[in-house]
Image 1 (tube, rainbow, N blue to C red):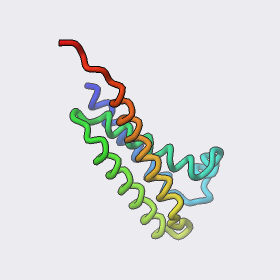
Image 2: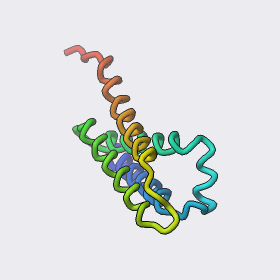
Image 3: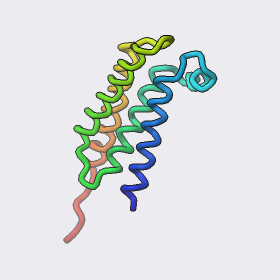
Length: 119
């Protein structure tokens, strides 16, 4: 049951990322989100995507999941280049990748301190 909930939340998170990436730049939806800064917003979005995608897997492949999240981030930047009022920005793609890698690093770091259960 936990995996289905995580999958639904991950799909919703991805939908929000796609809509946020393709909405007009001057819309009322996008402008309030820039309170924390563009780089932080992108990094947090892809950190969250990576974490949710890892949680949605029974046998998580953490680094492969991070690579997939980075590819999604690059694809979203490419899609922005096709919209009339948005532009592809390399700093946004970098922020997406940083967020995905930090998300994967969170699980890697957590796994380093996991103790084995007694038999």
